[in-house]
Image 1 (tube, rainbow, N blue to C red):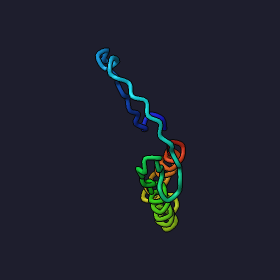
Image 2: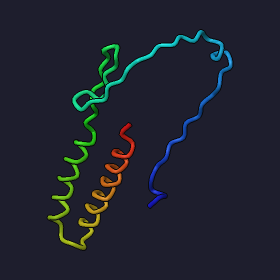
Image 3: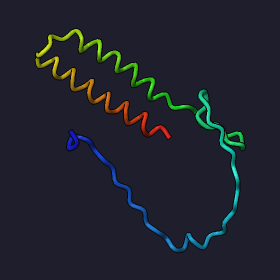
Length: 98
Protein backbone atom coordinates (compact mmCIF):
# COMPACT_ATOMS: atom_id res chain seq x y z
CA UNK A 1 0.00 0.00 0.00
CA UNK A 2 1.03 3.60 -0.46
CA UNK A 3 1.54 4.28 3.25
CA UNK A 4 4.20 1.57 3.56
CA UNK A 5 6.41 3.13 0.88
CA UNK A 6 9.06 5.60 1.88
CA UNK A 7 9.72 8.84 0.10
CA UNK A 8 12.67 11.21 0.34
CA UNK A 9 12.83 14.97 0.49
CA UNK A 10 15.69 17.14 -0.71
CA UNK A 11 16.20 20.74 0.30
CA UNK A 12 18.27 23.12 -1.84
CA UNK A 13 19.63 26.36 -0.47
CA UNK A 14 20.46 29.16 -2.91
CA UNK A 15 23.72 30.96 -2.23
CA UNK A 16 23.90 34.28 -4.08
CA UNK A 17 27.72 34.40 -3.71
CA UNK A 18 28.07 31.26 -5.83
CA UNK A 19 26.10 32.95 -8.60
CA UNK A 20 28.99 35.37 -9.23
CA UNK A 21 31.55 32.66 -9.92
CA UNK A 22 33.45 32.52 -13.20
CA UNK A 23 31.53 30.54 -15.77
CA UNK A 24 33.68 28.18 -17.79
CA UNK A 25 31.89 26.54 -20.67
CA UNK A 26 33.02 23.05 -21.45
CA UNK A 27 31.23 20.67 -23.74
CA UNK A 28 31.41 16.94 -23.16
CA UNK A 29 30.08 14.20 -25.42
CA UNK A 30 28.34 11.23 -23.81
CA UNK A 31 28.14 7.72 -25.18
CA UNK A 32 25.62 5.39 -23.53
CA UNK A 33 26.52 1.73 -23.75
CA UNK A 34 25.86 -1.68 -22.28
CA UNK A 35 29.28 -2.74 -21.00
CA UNK A 36 30.05 0.74 -19.67
CA UNK A 37 27.06 2.83 -18.67
CA UNK A 38 28.51 6.15 -19.89
CA UNK A 39 31.76 7.04 -21.60
CA UNK A 40 32.54 10.74 -21.94
CA UNK A 41 34.59 12.36 -24.66
CA UNK A 42 37.24 12.96 -21.98
CA UNK A 43 37.66 9.15 -21.78
CA UNK A 44 36.02 8.92 -18.34
CA UNK A 45 34.14 5.65 -17.94
CA UNK A 46 31.24 5.03 -15.59
CA UNK A 47 30.52 1.35 -15.07
CA UNK A 48 27.11 -0.13 -15.74
CA UNK A 49 25.22 -0.73 -12.48
CA UNK A 50 24.14 -4.37 -12.30
CA UNK A 51 21.55 -3.90 -9.57
CA UNK A 52 18.67 -4.84 -11.87
CA UNK A 53 20.22 -8.19 -12.76
CA UNK A 54 20.90 -8.88 -9.07
CA UNK A 55 17.28 -8.10 -8.24
CA UNK A 56 16.01 -10.40 -11.00
CA UNK A 57 18.21 -13.22 -9.70
CA UNK A 58 16.86 -12.65 -6.19
CA UNK A 59 13.29 -12.58 -7.55
CA UNK A 60 13.75 -16.01 -9.13
CA UNK A 61 15.02 -17.38 -5.81
CA UNK A 62 12.11 -15.88 -3.83
CA UNK A 63 9.57 -17.20 -6.33
CA UNK A 64 11.05 -20.69 -6.03
CA UNK A 65 10.80 -20.44 -2.25
CA UNK A 66 7.19 -19.24 -2.53
CA UNK A 67 6.24 -22.16 -4.75
CA UNK A 68 7.42 -24.62 -2.10
CA UNK A 69 5.25 -23.15 0.67
CA UNK A 70 1.80 -24.49 1.51
CA UNK A 71 -0.70 -22.13 -0.03
CA UNK A 72 -2.58 -20.14 2.59
CA UNK A 73 -0.10 -20.70 5.43
CA UNK A 74 1.49 -17.83 7.33
CA UNK A 75 4.92 -18.65 5.85
CA UNK A 76 3.38 -18.58 2.36
CA UNK A 77 1.93 -15.15 3.13
CA UNK A 78 5.32 -13.84 4.33
CA UNK A 79 7.00 -15.15 1.18
CA UNK A 80 4.26 -13.65 -1.00
CA UNK A 81 4.79 -10.24 0.59
CA UNK A 82 8.56 -10.48 -0.04
CA UNK A 83 7.94 -11.29 -3.71
CA UNK A 84 5.46 -8.41 -4.04
CA UNK A 85 7.89 -5.93 -2.48
CA UNK A 86 10.68 -7.08 -4.77
CA UNK A 87 8.40 -6.75 -7.81
CA UNK A 88 7.71 -3.16 -6.77
CA UNK A 89 11.42 -2.49 -6.29
CA UNK A 90 12.26 -3.90 -9.74
CA UNK A 91 9.56 -1.73 -11.32
CA UNK A 92 11.11 1.33 -9.65
CA UNK A 93 14.59 0.33 -10.80
CA UNK A 94 13.41 0.04 -14.39
CA UNK A 95 11.53 3.33 -14.19
CA UNK A 96 14.43 5.26 -12.63
CA UNK A 97 17.43 3.86 -14.52
CA UNK A 98 18.55 7.23 -15.82
